[in-house]
Structures are given as C-alpha cells and as structure tokens.
Image 1 (tube, rainbow, N blue to C red):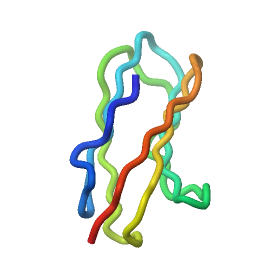
Image 2 (image 1 turned 60 degrees about the horizontal axis):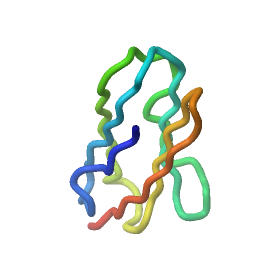
Image 3 (image 1 turned 90 degrees about the vertical axis):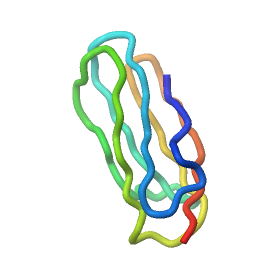
Amino acid sequence: ILNQNTPNPFNGITSISFCLNSYGYVKLCVFNTLGQLVSTLADGNLSAGNHLFTFNGADLPAGVYYYQLQTSLGIECKQMQLLH
C-alpha cells in the first residue's frame, strides 16, 4: 500500500512510505509531468512491512511530480507538489 508523501506540498525534501504484505521485488520511481524518470528511490527486493524513503527535489523545478510503486501485485501511483 502506497501512502501519500509527507509533507505535501513540499519544499525540497519529502518522505514516501509504503507497506508490503510479503517479501518481494519493489521499484519506487519519481516522474515529472512529461512522464520522464526523475529519480529511482528503490529497485530490488525488500522485506514485508513498512518502508520509508526520502526524496530530495531541491534541484528540480517547482511543479507536480508523480511517484510510482511497482510490485508483483501491481502498480500504484500518487501525485505530489514541489514548491520553492
């Protein structure tokens, strides 16, 4: 389960968390509004339970970004707003 990032909107740094029901492969990525990959925060196997990643967008232009969690169960995506 992918949670909403906190804080949102954010200025520079935000936290993205999710919970996994079982051990497995996870890919967590951030995209801009054009669908271009901005950052890969996780790409590998993770244990079951809660996970927290930090995204630093300080060098990016202000605007809307999307973060996507891909697991064996499917894909979840949420929106976040970067302010400067």
